Length: 261
Image (cartoon, rainbow, N blue to C red; front, top):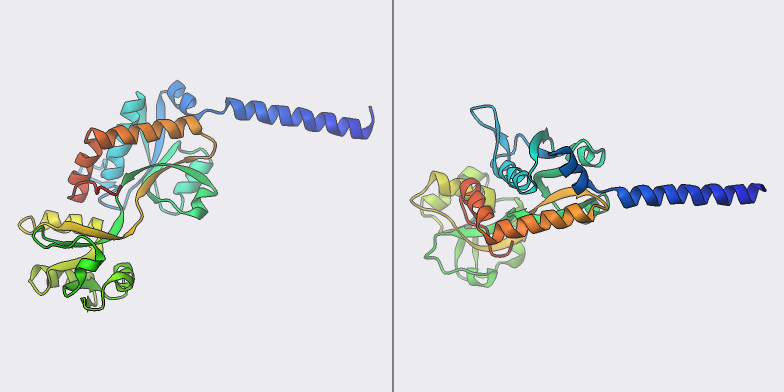
């Protein structure tokens, strides 16, 4: 057999092996066979994930992980991760999924796939329900508080009409105080902050007026797992329609799921 023929034969054999391995790669089937799913979750990012007084993980992401494991009929193994190591844990197969307030962007899409979205994560304009604001145009002639130099400040400055009075404060506490003391009737902040404020100031809950910048949370999974991705999307879709995700959002974020999710 000539060197060229040997090379072609070896290459053909290798290709066949790779194709065969790829064809049989099915994370969903492997999870069900093992009877357990390993999910990376945050441990220091409330309300998405933290450690409770009973030393057990709790939060929005943990409840979503439980929901998925229950639907799949498998045992849940929670794996605490940091922002830096959550994707490496996935790509090295230390976990099957990442549910850790993970946003989707083009750089990450080159490495992993996504399912969802399952949770709102955004900067927006908030106020009480009786304030008639539904878009940036409705801010004309109104006064709104924001923390100087924050993402909300930068994005709000791009969309607010020239007649809007934007009161900028040096820190978040001052911004919040301005709203609750009545200096302003609108505030630009993150939905997580707004949810926390609504819990602590229940007599003056915040209503989402509109979203300035949206970056919802997605489930991360490895590339090429179409069956698992399809199943996860179906689980999230059902959880949205039957109210499960809305209940999780109200519990941990202090607000219902936005219609835009």
